[in-house]
Length: 96
Length: 223
Image (tube, rainbow over all chains, first blue to last red; front, side, top):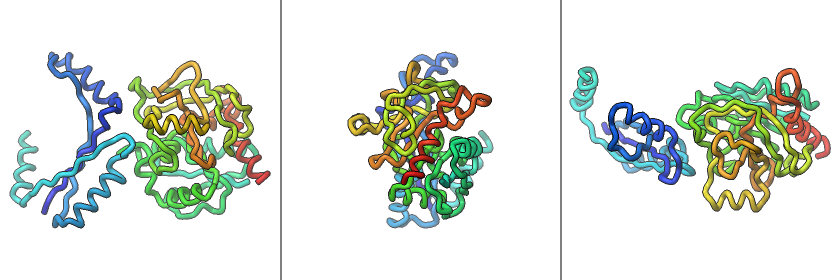
């Protein structure tokens, strides 16, 4: 199986009020070295078998549904997974 | 004059929109998001609210509801469509209108009586207004900042497709104070403020919003 990750970010020229709000909270943590924060979305799409056709479908999903091309850019990348890695990551989350 | 009002899961203002249609002398037809049926209506209102919980992006999931397939096709054929607030967002996500609506630049949900200028009284939704009429209707939105690229904004202005503009206060950071726009053909109008909440003195800031609905009713009578 494989996991395809789609990151969606507001285009650089679009103001990101949520990122600004997060950024303005940083001094309250005593953090002053961060000059900007932009907030985006991460989608994880699980597929049994990663074929070229599947990947092009995911590009279509990313373009038509997950992002709005007027205001957002998207990035698609593949994370190869086997069963043990999937279990391992779940254990990590429980421990955290 | 049968005007359909679509109810999506999470629509809030469908009842007020239906009531405004009745006040304007039209017959309201309830339309359901899950059906492929416009029931032969003469015009459609996409009401305000939080369809599908505003998940993903406002209007992004509603765009793929069965009724929107029919609305998009009918709108391309000239059916008058008015999208208010969330309805405006759905029209942008459906690509019936250009641009997009983003979170207010002030990062707050804004709820106020808003002054507007009607910039285009040639649409089926604004023909009962004088060109340049200044009106007060309710505005309430969290994601009402209208954005589009400069070329699109210039084209909207040049072609007279800005339907309404904010006066005095720009409540959400909308570019060029844009409160509402129309498509090239002029039958599809998206508007962020809520004329349906300003159709009688008892429940709103006046009756300035009623003409959106009387416009459609009288246009359809003469069509």
